[in-house]
Image (tube, rainbow, N blue to C red):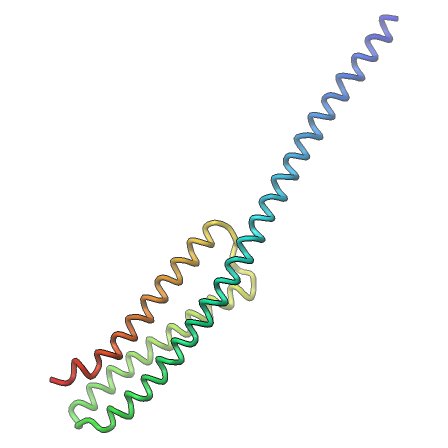
Length: 153
């Protein structure tokens, strides 16, 4: 009889250990699932935000190119001294615009090729990229507006 109690006790104890172990594995699996779901949510959100930002940026870059072409026509009507200086400045602006187009394409490729680790840091990086990119586009736009203003004197 004591042997029977001993065997029942061991059986109950071992079942309790398996249950605890199974519970920890279930918790770990649940945590991994939550992390993966969070990453998918972040990925979906960042991709959607990126597509919107990219479309707006491409439109702005295209508008800038049109403004530069318009300025070239205006520059052609300027006197020779101004024309040389204005052409140099417009070339610089055109180069900056192309650099922005290249940065946009590089970032877009990273999204297409899933080279971005979609986590909280990716959100911060995306906001920083968009803020810097917008600032650079604004700087080009302001420089275009000021081009003839500075050379009117």
